[in-house]
Length: 228
Ligand SMILES: [Zn+2]
Image (cartoon, rainbow, N blue to C red):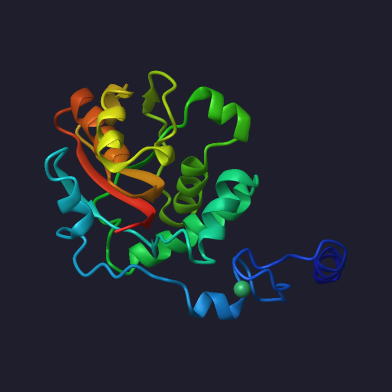
């Protein structure tokens, strides 16, 4: 097995997605140096923090957690680029696992019943071959043993959020999500998963959609990165 692993490393060298250095044995997601310098976002209180306050006028959020600070000028932005545009769904799964372990240190998962990824448009999902938020959720599920439920749907194609300014984003994102929640999943604590939170428009609208489908649901949010 180890010989096979060694052979695999020799034939298909793995590179650190942040700095591009060759990963050596024992280095998994990123190289040891990049792992040490990860731009972690410091969450002091999972039930009262900036992420939740950003959504206060959108939806009632019970808990919020995030793993990394998002900055598109940082080399760590490559993590997001790779999971979104370079087909690295396995990297998304590994980041999901890592983020879930960090959240567990804050007892974030104590009340959670299921993981709900933010959906892509059908076209984008087809183009990419996977939904990166769902891959993050699958990684989190491996750690937490929680189910991943695709409860949210998108109604139609609109201009991608990244091309819009803050105010336009809030308007654009209105009403494009809806949720269908089966009876067995009503009154549960659902954790919304996404790759990046900027204005919070997407997560806010997804939370609203879930609460419209089930007013007794409790909503938590867990974007992998936060640009706050
Ligand atoms: Zn590195």
